[in-house]
Image (tube, rainbow, N blue to C red):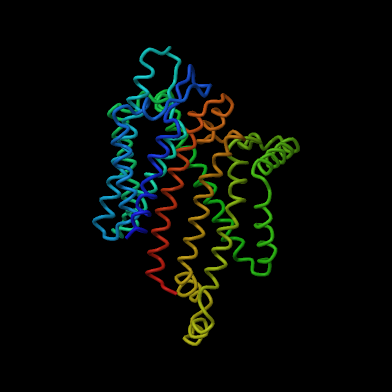
Length: 380
């Protein structure tokens, strides 16, 4: 009993501890400087104790609760605490900027980010423990919807990140579309290359060595090498410019990203082809199945979970690597990230990075569900 009490107190302690020790907001004269830290009492005002109490309750119940009902209550408490925190820092930012110059900014500090990440993780853990159908995607969608509701209601308007979003809303939309197009294009190119290389049986060892070797090359160095190679090719064959070829833009970015995606796709394909055991293959041959039928009716179905697993890894990798496409003029969310780095504007960096994280998590969750469904459909 005492051990469980200690466990509950330890689980409930992190958020109140962060509230007591770390700042929640930074008030700066402009978007380029860090500014003055504001503690939880100043930033949250009357929301301080509700946030501390509800988060402690939710985390404590999550650590101690064993039933589905208690787990769901814990998740709801953590979601409520996150909502109150956002409302509180939004109100605190608005109050802090009331008498400040127009260029002043209020941005989330380390304490607020730590608590938000902790509470979001707790909500996801509660959804997973409750074992509800689609629980984790529903929890993620709920948190996203909650954030959208607070934003539409105007509770977050005073925060610097919301102001960056308002100033670059149209640019962000186009950047997301370009990012998805670049990621999907590179993934498709890598898939086609993997299928083509997979048909070369005698060269599988060389292919494995080559796709593994690409991984040790830094991405910036690879993109730089591709740009230099394309420039040399265009210098030798200027007529290629008339067909739309360029040393910068989507061409080098697609090629570079696809090169990195070959390894998970290649390893997934090879593992899928080896999924059936020898007895299954012998039985298939005894039934008179041709090599093509063995491939389509035995190897690929049994290897489908591994194939989807490789696709999942490659998709998440593509979404992350597409950020570097901005270095060679391919656009995407990397444009916002590198513009923010050039201007020393942390919120502009976050404006580009947070959608990449969200897209990666969505792809990971969706393809993991497909992989689990494939394992249930074709158990090994």
